[in-house]
Amino acid sequence: MTNWLAEHTLVFGTWGVLAAVLLLPALESALPLFGALLPGQTAVVMGGMLAGSDRVPLYAALVMALAGGVLGNAVGFAAGRRWNTRLLERIPRRLLRPGHTDRALSLVQRGGGRAVFVGRFTAVLRTLVPTLCGMSGMPLRPYLVWTVLSSAVWASAFVFVGYGLGHAPLPLL
Image (cartoon, rainbow, N blue to C red; front, side, top):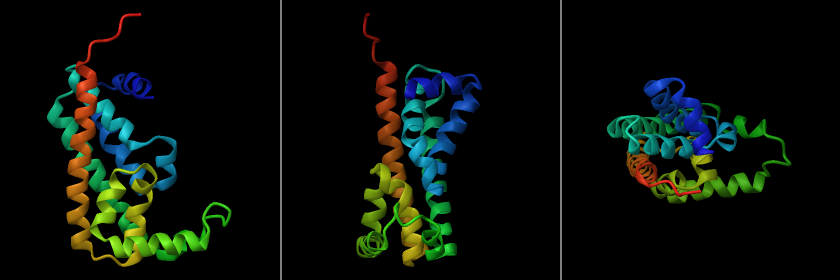
């Protein structure tokens, strides 16, 4: 998946790659169904791989991945705050049971910032936690602090994973 994404974004040059590293993580958290189709973490690893092979600047991949994570979480939080349970009412019952939603909201309320941090590193939660935090009434300031902290650790970790892969010698066939 990462190689396919790299091939198709390199067509647009450095700015196309950096746009993907910014937009895919942002869309993943802002539009949960989008994240199921193409995880933003894939774009972040790709940005690191291309930085490792000197196709994009490393600092730019890091900044874009961090900005994408924070931006997507902020939009997801705002959507949850704005539309609250009306968002959940539109999801078919066979996909999302009310008991599961109540339990998830309770976990977010109890976990607070820890839920934001852990959610950033878990594929399914990365798409849902921002909206659930907005719905739960979590205060904005602590949410943003945890979002920036978790996104900074997440972006750095996965850009550097990709960076290491970009520097790795290719196996002989």
